[in-house]
Image 1 (cartoon, one colour):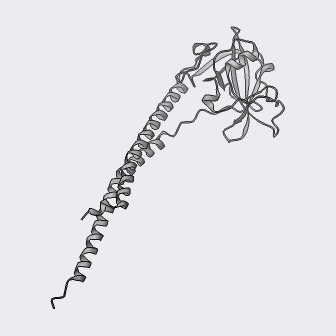
Image 2: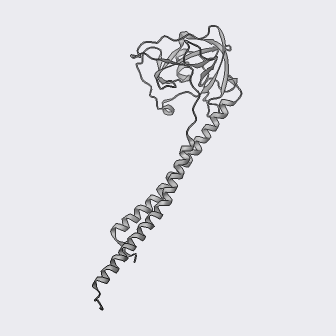
Image 3: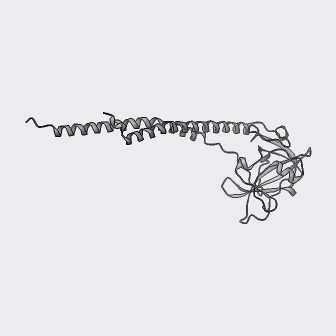
Length: 262
């Protein structure tokens, strides 16, 4: 009844089914790993954002690489903004998707070290060749609060360094590069300022990091495993239908060839 399974067509169909099953199972496992990774990141970010603020130098120091556990921790720092040496970071978007600059201003700390502070977003002119007008920060000694971030690199961000940029414009925020430019002792990483809150005429405050859509990966995981389960079921349905059709065709052919007894 099922000798047709040895035909070229059915051998190929069966081999395809046998290949699809482990591939779909593997894709489901990959989505499971993505779900777990994104869930862990969301939990880490949430814990960091809700942790009690600490002085920045408790978490970072010159040459320090900010870890994933330290990233997004709320830190405080006291010092004086050095607007003479501030730069802008090109091709950064705000919450509405508009392209502009991030304003990176060194904060001279009371102990002589320097902290890089991303004060927020400002719009860019069409040419992006001249240094933009930047709202001034508070004058004199100020205490700020913000989220600690790791140095940006091409490998981590995908953003490439470009040579020959207009004066005081950069592509990546990197404490080592800024330490060389400033000739100063700069703390590792940088801070996205969240307080004091931005007022009219100030750079637009950078929004909180969003949560990654981990449930979507969970749904994809279930979907791939359902597909994997459906392949053998579908194969068996096709086999049964083919067998039934062949049996009916054979029975019809037999009845036509048998002589009538009437």
